[in-house]
Length: 226
Image (tube, rainbow, N blue to C red; front, side, top):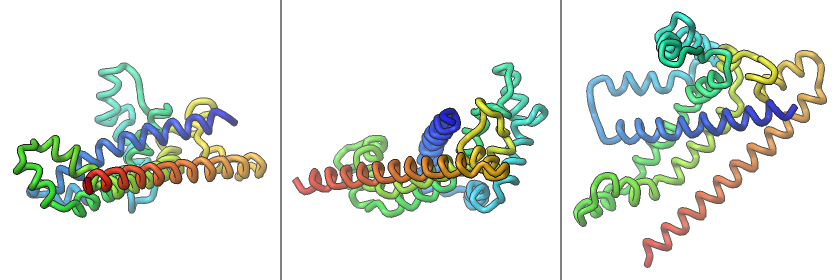
């Protein structure tokens, strides 16, 4: 009973970190750059949000399968396979969580006052310093909402994870897997217990992140007024 909880938290945290880094990178890149095919690439980014999870899982199954391009590359480099390991659950959760992070981050960057960024550049700050000291603090509330949504999506991922990682007890069995198969077998006691656990944990995580966000915003506002 403990392992699915531990695995779900681990998978969700790693998937959220991956979505955060990749989402921030592409959100900033696509915000400042215009190039042919940009809209098509963004449409691809949002596909996991609108496609059925089983379709997303099937695509990942093809890509990371034994004869898939990514699966072949992983086997050649690491002499192992990704499918039906807990890392497959991480990849599936990252893919379905990424659109939420990207969308939130891009909207957050669009809300930043470009006059403040321009003023920092005039005063001699390079682009990295402007991004770290001006852009990110101002965009942080919106980015944090993306983190929360990504984490919630990752910890609740079921369809794509089932297709790529399976339901292997002690190896790839996450909380949603246990809940689904417990209900299917009539074990409502286990299902209710895990439902309560995931609700409490998700609530606590969201509450803590919101508190942290508010604290950072107030601190930055106070600093700006001084």
